[in-house]
Structures are given as C-alpha cells and as structure tokens.
Figure 1 (tube, helix red, strand yellow):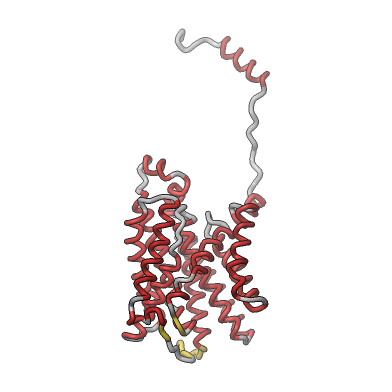
Figure 2 (figure 1 turned 45 degrees about the vertical axis):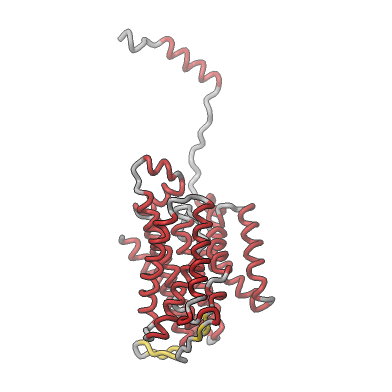
Length: 344
C-alpha cells in the first residue's frame, strides 16, 4: 500500500513536469499529439489487465472506447456535464457492460472468447448506427469551449484535455502496478499460466476474471469519454475503428504483457512513432507500421521489450548440472552398504 502511494505521487510529479514542459514549448501540436499517445497508454494498460495478466485476448477494445465516447455525446445533448463527471459516468457504464459481457463470455476460452468480444463490438456499433439521438450513422458534432479556468489558471481547452488524459494515464498505470504486486495479480497470473490447475487448487477463477473485465472495460470507457471534445465530431466509423483494437493489442505485446511497464513503453514508442509517420508520410501508413512491428516482435522478441531486456538485470544464479555416471555409481554403492530401514 505504501509503495503504491509513493508510486502515485511520483506519477503525479511526472505528469506535472510533462505538462509544464509542453506549455513551455508553446506548440499546440504537442498537446494534440500528446493526447493521442496518452490515450493509447490508458487503452493499452486497460487491455493488459485482461489480456496480459489473465491471458484472455480481447478484440472488443473499440466497443468499450465507443461506449465512453457516446456516453459523453448523450449527456452533451441532454444536459452538459464537466468532463471529470463524464469520466465517472463512462467508467460506470463501460464497467457494467464489461461485467455483463464477462459473465456471458468468460466461460469461453482461447479464440472463442476473442471472437465473442469482437461480436460485442459489432453489436454495439449496429446499435449506435441506428440510434438517431446520438447521431446514428451520420455522426454528431460536439462544440467545445475555447478555454477553461481551473482554480484561477487559464488553459486552452486542448491543454485541459491533455491534462485530464495525463492524469488518467497516471491513474491507469498506478492501478496496473498495484494489481501486479497484490493477491489479485497473483490470482490473475495463475489463470494465465494454467486455469484448470488454478480451479483445482480452489482459486475463484470466474470471479477474478469478472474483476478483470470490469476494470479493463471501465478504463477503456474513461479513455473514450473526452474523445468527442477532442475531435469535435463523432461517428461510428471513427469510434469503433479497427485502429483502437489493433493498437491496444500491439502496444502491450511490443512492450511486454506480463508487467505494468510493458504497455507503457509500447504505447510511448509506438504512439510517438505513429504521430511522426502521420506528419511526415501519411496517417494511412499507421496500421501497416503496427502490423509490421507486431510481426517482427512476435518473431524476434515474443515477450516484448521488457522480456528482451529483463535477463540483463537478473542476478546470475547457480545452474543445475546433472550428476555424472561415477557419482551415480558411488551413490548406489553407498546406498547398498548402508543398513536398510526395515532391519532397524
């Protein structure tokens, strides 16, 4: 608990430094590009709670992201609320959907579970396309204010969104780290390693998986809540886009899925690279770039960058060597010469 509090304080300090540095640079594009990278940190970390810690590959990232986005659109048209409140609402809605989806699908394993989560995204997209109140297939415009005042500080709205997403990213990484070093994380690891053995040992696997789907879905929904105010126009094709599902899987795999820092590293590297490619070449190259890197890392470093570097920081231990034939013979001779337990 104490280490988690210290880590959260360090994360807040890093957020403050990043925000101050971005403001000092005086370039608004840093906030636009940085928002996208931070958004992917939240999505990759949220995906890793279920996909990395528990070993259940989720293809429905875009569905939970879109739930958070359209929850904001709904309240923007009904009764405008501040973004921090929308984050809480998105967490509740997406978390409940994650809980219900997990209860229906977590009895499936492997590819069957992945296909079920992909079907969830298709069903929700069909529902949104036919819901005219939130724009339906034609989409919906969200007009955001030009600036905002926070405790007497005047911020442009994109800076405000950047700060909110940076705090959300810090919270997501802190939660993931706290889970990894807790009994809950050990339970997740038993599911990932051998679920049948975990069940036989008395581990409540279904309950743990429901916790994972709820937490993962809630964080994904929170990542999507500010999106309508960032982009200004929301349509099903953009919120349910393939890019969210692909990036949310690729970034943890490239960074490393068995630890909290893997999705963070993968998101920063791949997200930054995508922003550079978007400016210098074209945004259409992003998915091609992600696919090539994903294939390369699966072949060269299947455990990601963390797994590639981790052996360098481990202490060299003693290696086990099989006994030689002479030692086997001497051991057999000594056993034969010693009195048996039956005679004693």
